[in-house]
Structures are given as C-alpha cells and as structure tokens.
Amino acid sequence: MYAAASLALSTFFVPALTSCESPGASPEQEAAQARLEAQARVIEAEVSELRGRAFLRPVDVQLADEEDFRAYVDRRFALSYGPGEFEAEEYVAKMLGLIPTGMSLWETTMELLDAQVGGYYDPSQDAFYLMEKFDNPQLTGVILAHELTHALDDQLYGMDETVESLNGNGDAELAYHSVIEGSGTALMTQWQLKKVLGGELSMEDMGDVDLGMEAMKDLPEFLWKPLLASYVRGQMFLNRTTNMMAAQMKAPKLADIERAFKTPPSSTEQILHPKKYWDEEEFDAPQTVHIDSSALPVGWEVLNENTMGELFLGMVVNPLDARDAIDPGNPMSIVGIKYTNDAAGGWDGDRYVFLGRGDERVFHAHVVWDDEAEAEEFQAALEAMGDHIQGALRELAASGPGSHGWNVVRHGNQVSFTAAVVESGTGSVESVVDSLVARVSDSTE
Image (cartoon, rainbow, N blue to C red; front, side, top):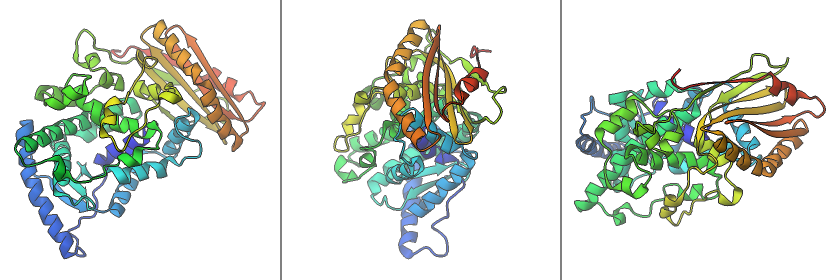
C-alpha cells in the first residue's frame, strides 16, 4: 500500500546478506569491518544505558554494498507480496491519482531507497548491516544508534511476529512501523544530544552528507510521506505530543515504549492523534469493515484488498496545490509537512477491494466516519478531486480497455467510492458493485 515505506521499513524481515568476512574480502574491507565491530560494541552499550534495558545477546554487524542491498530487497519482496499484489497496489495508486500513470513504482521506489538507506537490521539473523558508502564515522555512529535500538526492541518484543500478524492491513502495519521507527529515532536523537553536549559530536563532524532529501524532491508524496511519517510522527506519538520540537527535547517514557510494542496502535489515526491511543477518555480504535465479494459476476476475481487509513485517505483528498514537496536545501522543511487534513479527520475504519477481469479493473472502497458531518466533509473533498482522478482513469483506459468510471456515494456516516477502467458498453461496473456487500462491526467485537 505504501510502496517506499513498506519496502524500506520491512527490510527488518529479510534473510541475511552475504557477509563481508567472506574469503574474497579485501584488506580494506576487513579493516572497515573491524572498525565497524569496535564502534558497534561501544554504541551498543550506550543504547542500552539510554534505554534502560540490556541486550539479551550481542548483535552481529556487517558491511553491505548496493548489490547486496538489491538482493536483500528482492528477497524481502518475495516474502512480503503474493503474486500480483505489488502490481495491484501500484495500479490503485495510479487510479486515485497518487502517482503518474506512466511511473514504474518499483524502479522509483528502489531509486529512493538506494539514496535513503544507510543501514538496516535483520532480526532473523540478529544482525545489523551498514552500507559501505557511508564511511563517515560520525554518521555511522548515528546510524548505529538508530539501528541497534531496533535490535534491542526486537530482542525484547519480537517485532517480526507482530508485523506478520498485521498482514493485509496496511494502515495498522504502518502504525506499528511508526512505533518501530519512532523508538529508533527517539533514542538516536537522545544519543546525538548527549554527544553534542559532551563535545564529542558537532554538525560540522557530520560533514556534507546527502541522506536522500534530493531524491525525494520531485517525487509524489505517496512515495515519501508515509516513510517520513513513520520516523517523525512515530517519535511524536511515543512522546504523546503533536509538537515536533517537544518530541525532540525529551526521551519517551520506557513504560510508554513497552506499551506501544506490546499493545500496538491499530491505525495511523492513533499515530497522528496520539490522544486517541494514550488518553482513556479519547481512545478511538477503528471499526472493522469487511467487503463480501463472494457473489462477484463470472470472470471477476479479487486481485487485492487492504485498509487505507487516515494518512492514505488524507493524500487522496489533498488538493494538488496543497500537496507537500521536500526542499533538499532546507531540512527544516520537514517540520511543516502535514500528514493529514480536515477531510480525512474523523476516520473510523475502511476496506477496499481491487478486482480484475482480463485487463479490466475495478477499485471499490467503503469508509466509515465518526458521524455524518465527517462523512459529508470527506465526500465533498473526494468529489472535488474528481477531475484529477478522472484524468488518471482516462489515461489508464486509453492504454487498456478504453472506458472508465468514477462514483462517490454516501449513506449516513459511511462513504463508498468506485474507480473503474473497463470495456465500454458492458455494464460491468454496475454489476460488480451491486454484488459487493460491506459489513461494519465495532472494533471491540
């Protein structure tokens, strides 16, 4: 659902890379490996002290190059997506006007990750991998502080089991990844602050390092906004605040980190509005929406289904002139990024199905809102995006079946919307939508 975020954040759950301690390692590689191991042991102890929890076992550390990383992602992709699922998510993003119809989501995502990834942790091997291109010792220290926090969290809470249990709910999975990355970012921030106050680290020490901001500059927010949200809003969530600067100034309470890992937030709504998770009186778990597709017309099949959530729907209804852009020359531009909007607020659960017959495609979503006023506001915002979405559907239809359709319907506090690329004159959209039955149940049921 969130291509860059999904592949980048889920690299925790991929088989190990080839070690640079192989027989073919050069003396330079062996020396770099030794430096990495020595630095990791020091920072491992610092992470443990800052978090107030001991590692259960040492974390293996290795070097990796871009070829290793590509192979790593390929294996992750094979484990995370069933046949056709990634292509289905790409097509949905194109139907809703979130990415250009001519974009290769896979190639663009990989280009972004190549620029972004400095290191990653693999819990299946209890191992951290540092990209060889990051040879700045100060930057390596920052990356280690972040990734070794993932290792500690995984040893204590078993991250991969939770991610596997959320398969099929992209919104809940992104919420959990926000806990993971928020934890790593919070401790990394505290580690940096301690080093700066101790005179061991300065901004000059970091050097002229490109952390991928330039790669984000011209990309649709669909690719990078969920990725950034997991780090920025994840840290804010663990600090129980919506103030980014306040989150930077203190570490989250250990009890809150443990609660978030053991009883994860169930939606990006709770990440974006922390009181809906932390405050007993304002707690708001989403309702469960199921779309029964058992009566589909002959020839039609479900290609994919998922849950979108507030962050995703906020991007769908975000006007074109309000869609955020990254300014590579100004890291503070991140502070002003908006991860939701009024029209997406009040979300209370959703589900979509993506259907196919030959080269025909139908997307159908059902969204529940807190009340009729919230549903009406979303409906109006969605209809205002109609020309943009119709334009995307027209482009897809021109290179496919030839016809397209778009419809939004509201019943009380529930909104359904459909996007279709089909053959003209078949009446297929109506028959498909009429066969679908949405059922809503309270989250406590």
